[in-house]
Image (cartoon, rainbow, N blue to C red; front, top):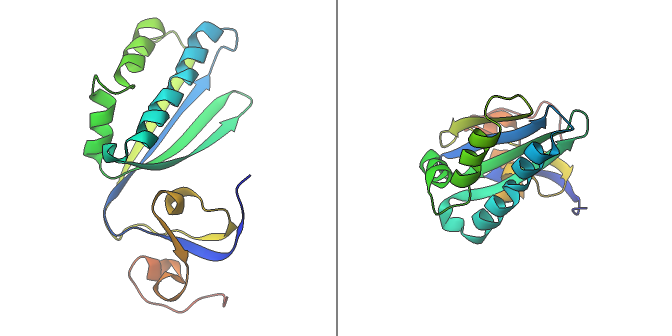
Length: 167
């Protein structure tokens, strides 16, 4: 378990970035030969992304629900171009599993996959982490105290106000 960092913190990122959510849902628990390879494909992708930061991957958080078996991963990228290049590049470990999923599962309903992509312009994100381990966008970028310009949500978005609840 990650160490809790007492206090209030925020993430610092001055450039635009991408939030990419991706997940899998097991729709037929008995179709192990279909959902297990789908689930196992993510590990090699993450290994490559962590090993080669020049691919534009900033970090991720993963979540799992037992029933129905569902995974959710929140990932952070430097740009959509980095994300798209990784997804389509034959030398990276995504394109082949994508093709295999379409060939072996396609529309049979046994396994669901999904993703959502959000392009975040510079200065258009804010975050707060109170008594949390270094997490999410702060783990993918810079974790910093939520004071001064980082004290309120409006200030984190470039505006000005006073805290509604004093710290």
